[in-house]
Image (cartoon, rainbow, N blue to C red; front, side):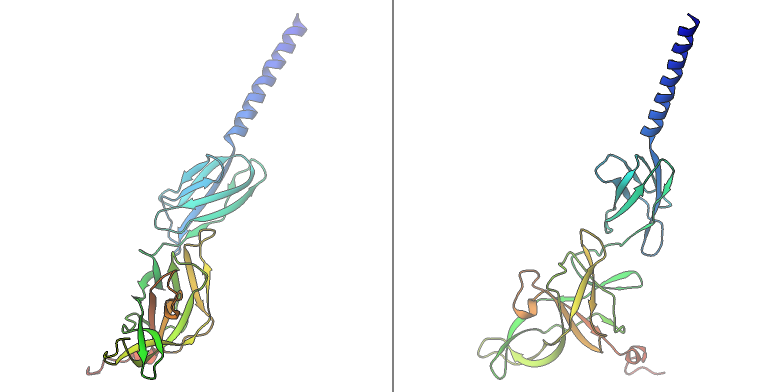
Length: 263
């Protein structure tokens, strides 16, 4: 009887231990991390989810999150309205607490288009749609009467586009020419037409969504007026019919007093 009693007690203890260990495993590993914006400010209200599971959390006022989950190669997804989404792969081998790499999310421009980013602020490039004009010697061109209203002194401005494709992006230097609308009696006027083509690349700031792209001209931009487009100045407007205009000014001109003003 005594032996049976001891065996039953041992079985009960083992059962309790199994339950406790199982409960600990179900509770899972603690995964912590931080989310910032591009100014290194803590970003609250970011939804953090372990892809393919129900494990999730939201960052607090200090940009911190904490998720309890089972070990494995975890793919975290980060989402917040008005910011680029992000993903992060975190290998978790055991039940020790894990501190994930910090994530930074880019804030998004207010609408689709091309922007100059300066001092963490988006400034929209001048937008217009080109029209067909006829040069004095007969050929027709696509050009615009509108001149760039946005200026920068930077020869390598930080240009980004939002909700436009990375393929077929084009950049041209602009010059003024005399041309007339196709009507036979139309008067000549000064318009801005494309001249030199400038190679430009588009790299995603967020993967895999590719909502926000940084545009990188292959050369430093000399003072002048430029157009970024997706074929609109070449008669191809199915991607976007607009051109986006910017002027690069000489830094010495930018620093000089306006004409007519006294020193």
